[in-house]
Structures are given as C-alpha cells and as structure tokens.
Length: 271
Ligand code: NDP
Image (cartoon, rainbow, N blue to C red; front, side, top):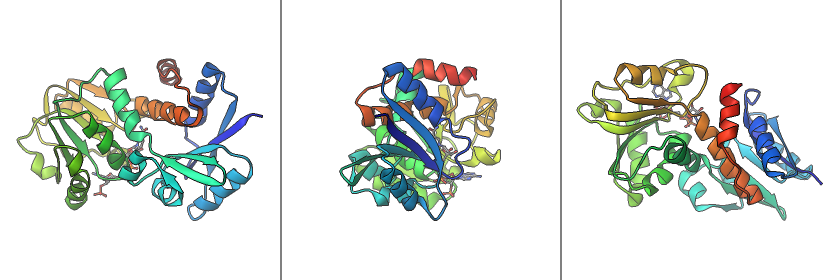
C-alpha cells in the first residue's frame, strides 16, 4: 500500500514540499504520496489526529506550527529538543515522534552545495525566532571560531546564546553592537525579507570573501541579499538549497534512504 505523508502549514498553498518529495520518491523508487494540508490556526493538533486516523505515516510542519508540533510529540530527537521546535513528525504505534531537520538542511547546503567551510570561521546569525533556534546547534557542531546571534529584540538573542552556550563560542546582542565586527558568513534567519526589509547592518560586516545567506528564497535578490551586495559580500545565496536539504533529511528520517538533492534543486531553479 502506498504510504502517505503531508506538510501542515497556514498558509500552505505556496509550498514546494509536495513537488520536492514527489521527485525524491521517483528517484528512490519509494512508494509514497505527499500532499499539502492547510491546518486551521486553532486546529493543528486535530488536523494531525485526522491525518493519523487516515493512515498517514509522517508529516512536515511549517509556519506557524513548529512549536505546537514540538509540544504534541511523545518522543523527540536531541536536535528537536535543543531547537524547541519540530518540523518532521513520524507516526507509529499510536505515538508521535518529532525531529527538526532545518538546521541540518542549512548546514548541508552551506557545507556541501556551497562549499563553505564553517570550522574556524566567524559566523553571524541574524534573528532569534524558530529558524535561528533550529540552526544554532548544527552550526555550533561545525566548530566555528565565533557565532554571534543578533536580533531586533536583543534580549531574545541573548537568551538564545545562553541556551546554546554549552555547545560552543556563541554570544547574542542587538544589531547596533555589530559595528566594527567582520564575519565570513552572515545568515539571515529573520523574516524581514518577507516584508521587503533587511536588518540594519553596518559597513564592514562582510569580511573579504564572505558569503551572505538568506533563508528566504524567491525570484531575484531578497532585500537582505540586495543589502549584502551593496555592502560588498563576495558571494550570495538564498534558502532554496536549505529547503531541499531539510526535505531530504526528513525523507531519510522516514524512509532510511537519502535522495540526491542536486537534480531536485536544479529542477526547482529551472521552474
Ligand atoms: P519567526 O517568526 O519565528 O522569527 C522571526 C524573526 O525575524 C525574529 O527574530 C524577528 O525579530 C525577526 N524580524 C521580523 N521582522 C523583522 C524586521 N523587519 N527587521 C528585523 N528583524 C525582523 O520566523 P522563523 O524563524 O520561523 O522564520 C524566519 C525566516 O526563515 C522566514 O523568512 C522563513 O521563511 C525562513 N525559513 C526558511 C527555511 C528554508 O528551508 N529555507 C526554513 C525555515 C525558515 P524579533 O524577535 O525582534 O521579533
């Protein structure tokens, strides 16, 4: 029998996940279908229960339900526990297991697809929401020289840095504190690009050769990438690779098979 998976979100119409997982399934010969499901803002848990009752085997979770998904789980992976958010659910024996593949997807896109070394480098992470939380553990695992979290609400960045302090050299603060500092990698994990805005970054924040990475993706430069270009970032990348890599990691969690991501990313870029 064909196994069923889905992604829950609100809104969800724009999701590329069904197309990505359909390509993974064709490529690996796995017998599964994957659909997008709109969950009501006050009805996420009920939507998950309905899907489980219909025989669903697993689900991805996107905005705004990742923290609610975390609370719904009976079991959590270590990386989901650290992130405090879940984007991958597995259903078996009446239990819900939660994982978070976002950070692994980001690091894989950076290290493999973009050939960007992280060990010994200075990294700036902008934002302190769910995406930043998911990214911190996997980034620190790669042993950067320093990881600075900067956020509009500085207290949230401070709190996040304290939460992850045992894992590596991380500190938090506001955007104003970045003056005079330079980084090899700047990752935008704020949702500012959604509103066509960019965090206020000082001149000189991009070290020579630096990569500017926006978790958001779309046609053309995002507001953050446009700013990075003006400030002299040597390389620019959007978050489409992260999207495909986090999906591949979820596919691996569910099926034990790791799909090839390069042809899928190329197909999405061409579409
Ligand atoms: P959250 O709502 O949890 O966090 C939003 C963050 O953005 C907060 O730190 C907030 O700061 C900051 N922010 C919002 N507006 C502005 C602004 N105008 N200027 C400066 N900072 C701002 O969102 P997520 O963490 O879930 O998502 C963040 C982004 O990452 C989204 O664009 C999302 O699409 C993308 N993403 C991409 C993925 C991929 O696979 N490519 C996966 C996951 C996320 P404050 O604390 O002050 O409110």
